[in-house]
Structures are given as structure tokens and as C-alpha cells.
Amino acid sequence: MIHPTAIIDPGAQLDVGVTVGPYSIIGDRVSIGRGTTIGPHVVIKGPAKIGADNRILQFASVGEDPQDKKYAGEDTRLEIGDRNLIREYCTINRGTAQDEAVTRVGSDNWLMSYTHIAHDCRVGNHVIMSNNATLAGHVHVGDHAILSGFAAIHQFCRIGAHSFVGGLAGITRDVLPYMLVAGQPPEPHGINQEGLKRRGFTPDQIRNLKEAYRILYRSNLKLAEAREQLAALAASQPEVGVIVSFIDASERSILR
Image 1 (cartoon, rainbow, N blue to C red):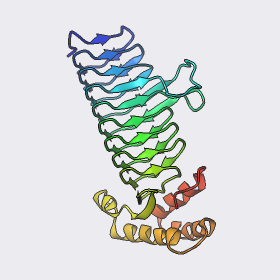
Image 2: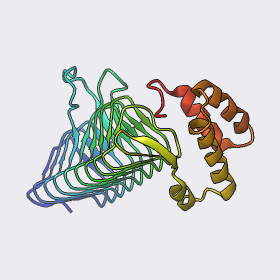
Image 3: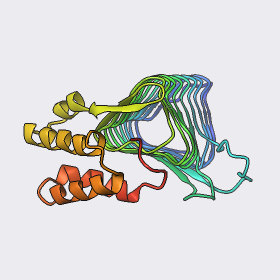
């Protein structure tokens, strides 16, 4: 399953059923799980742990040193889960000692061509990054979020679960869970209703989230005042509680 032109470091560990295509290079301290397919001309640098049943297509660069001037060769790593599709020319960098020294990508994600995940990012599960979407360092992306083509996320921002970021959007503040954000400059345009329907949210839950959006963005309340109203609703509406918790944890402020 290893093409004769591939270069595999003796310190790499490949599980059963791993396929490595022509001219790919697998470095020291790289672990690749069962059934993962590595296409041609892929470079994977360790320390990196890649799970099972991933597909990494040609010319991807996975686990390279972080693009951070403070990086001085510290021992940092990359962790990738299972069943991810990593398309052509994707770049995913390892972490830095200034954070937790690890970049993490979850499972069942779809990373399209030319996407970039910088050092110390945390990408959840079932995330879609369209062509050329870019995460700067220390960005956190929640489960089921969608980043459209050429979306650029500023370092230390958080993208909430089930949110949708439109194409060409430059995000410099946190995007709340469930929201649809688009434009230049980007603005909220309601909740990600179609996405929520596809993921099994009930009509009641969607109605609750629409009301939460109205309170946050259409009531002319200050954020602290809106947050208090949402907290009152969260006792019986757990989906609204997710928004409250996200607001409370925000360090960059939210896009509003």
C-alpha cells in the first residue's frame, strides 16, 4: 500500500490499511490510523497523530512548523481525528509553546482546496471550510460550522457551533453559535435556519433561536441587558443557554 517512490521515516507509525501515494513524504513521529489514504506529493511532518479513515489529497502540507516568529523549534504537535477529507494544497500547522503546543482538528470535517489552519487552532467536528478559507493562530471553530470561500478569521477569534460565515468575510470578533454572518464588513443576518433544519433542530428550537436573535440584534438592548434576557430563557431552552455560555466566555467581544 506504500508507493515505491514515497519516503517514510523509520520513526513513523502506519496502521493497517494505510495507503501512501507517489512521492509523498512521511516524517519522524508521525502516526497514521487504520485505513487512511495519503495521496501523491503529500508532506506530513511530526510530531503528528492522524486518526483512521482520513483522505489527504495531493500537495497537502500537514504538520509543518507554525508560522510564528516566536517559534524557536519547541516540541509541538498536531492531532487530527477520523474520517476527515483534506483536499489539495491544504496547509495545517503544529502548535506553539505560547498556547497548549498543539493544533487540534476533530473528525468528519471537509477541508476544501487551499484552506489553511494555523498554529494552535481548535477545529471541532463536521466543520466545512470552503476553498481558501483561512484560520489565523489560536482560532476555535465549533462543531458543524461552515466557512465559505475566502473567509478569513482573525487570530484568537471563536466561531460558534452551527454558524455560517459567508464568502470573503473578514472576521475580527467572535461569531455566536447558530448565526449567519456575511458581507463586507460582515454583519449578522439572522440564524443559520437551513443548516439547523438539516441537523434535526425542531421547529420549537428554531423559533427559540430566532427570538434570541431578535433580543440580541433587533431590540436595541445593550449586550449585558440582552444577555440577562437570554439567561432567563435558557432555563427552559438549552439551545439558548449555549449562546449565553459563549457570550460569557468571549474575550474579543462578539460580532454584533
